[in-house]
Length: 270
Length: 292
Image (tube, rainbow over all chains, first blue to last red; front, side, top):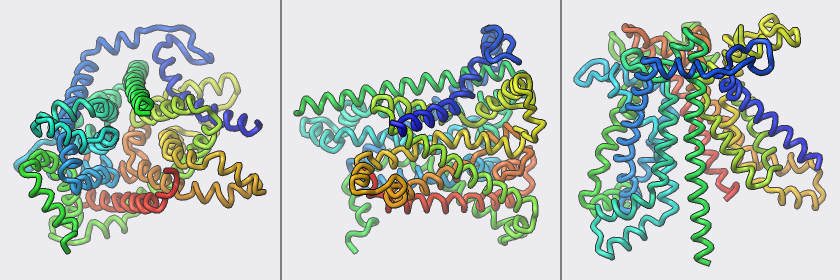
């Protein structure tokens, strides 16, 4: 009994520690004046109004959305078919994904940027300071997340058996993939996409070192804003966090639905 | 030699016909933005205007500035790794006291906070603990405690360590949870029935079971802190010499005078990361017995 209470106190403290900065950021973003009181003295949405009516914010947000969505779509188009083929036809090539997903851990953004700047600042492919280099480097950045999240959904459906069944019933290879396999792993693909987008929305290192002012993303905008207008920057941080929260909720919902479905199938099988 | 991986892959490829075509873009991207840059950094680190040599490396190890930035980074990462691991493990252990339904929800919450890092996190801490931060001012007004008078400074090492710990805790929590979960209550009960005290249980059973995972989690936390850049950059305006900041400083601006030096520093940093990854992979293989 005593142990349970200590555990709960420890948990409470850790959660308070983790959520204190988040709650404070959210409160501060709607506070009129807040200096010497425990809670804000008044509330306002004016900082959000100001932020969302700022054209620079709009442009930065649009750039981030463009580059993240382009990367994620490209990544889905390239990774999902090749992963499917690796599982069904080339099991040896699955190792390739594992190696490619471990490499980024040895090469965090700063290191990767050093190589990319040297390779792409001169020569035939001068793409530093353009969004193209971001799409390329973001592709390898999200590869581990794409791989992990979709691998699980490929595992839960029996890909090989499904493929064989579809082919026996007269489906072509392409048809099998598009009509049978893809819809079955769609939920995993959506999870992978959401995780990747939230990673890319928070990406600063590569954006700052590879393109900087030439393609100001939302994180670079935030970095600059932070020095100019604290309240506006805070409204931005708060909105950023709400977007992350929303994506997490969708992810939970997706995971929850999958779980109940799997459970349902199991009970039916019994 | 018929069963070596290369021949097997060859067989698979022949059997698959032209199905390897979709792999081409994947391989092209991986080469262009991951593998070739890695090779290029290594090449550039041993190549300068005078040809192939190790000058950049000797220059780094003879320069106080670079050695200190390496040392700082290693110290910060080790300290943050240990503290983060301690708090995260405590949290994961404490989570066992909560019912199953709540456990999943709390874990997702922890997972969510792990997204809070980099520039936004640094900014949130500035709002709270900066010179005119909410907590700083409140403490002064309500408790008469002048934080900055006591030597605390968010824009120094204290701040960096504090903020790094913040983003390490959720990670440690989630990394340790599976291992802690494997240490089920019934094992503890069985030990108690056989006469083990709480202390005995932890010394002989609990800790040995958790240790490989703790070490593995530590290597990941260490690597994560070592590679971090945005948080420290936003917090200290690149004044404090951490190796990631030093490397970035060498390449920012329009001129890039010493690519070889930046590359060599990057290779040294990658060396530490590779070692920690290898340790973790080794542990993963050995620790296969834990849990499932």
